[in-house]
Image 1 (spheres, rainbow, N blue to C red):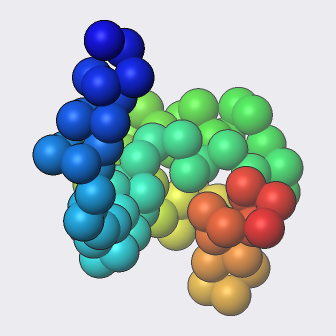
Image 2: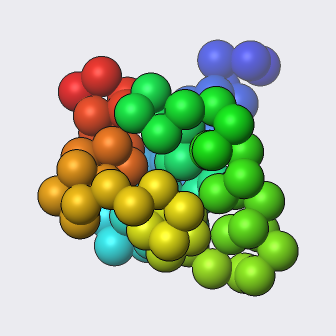
Length: 86
C-alpha cells in the first residue's frame, strides 16, 4: 500500500512541478534572515531586521540606511547564494 501511495503521490502531485525562480528570488529577498552577515554584525543585523519588519520594507532598504556600507559591499553581504555557501 505504501509503495502504491508514494507512486501515486509522485505521479499525481510531484511530476511536472517546476520552481518559479522569480517568485523564489522575491521570497528570499523579502526574508528577514538575509540580514545575518558577518560584516554587518549581530547587533546591527537585529536592529535592521526590527526596522524592516516594523516599517514593512525590505532588509536591503533598512540595511542601506543603518550600515552605511557602499552598495557593492552591501550587495555582497546580503547575497543569499553567498550566505548559503554557494
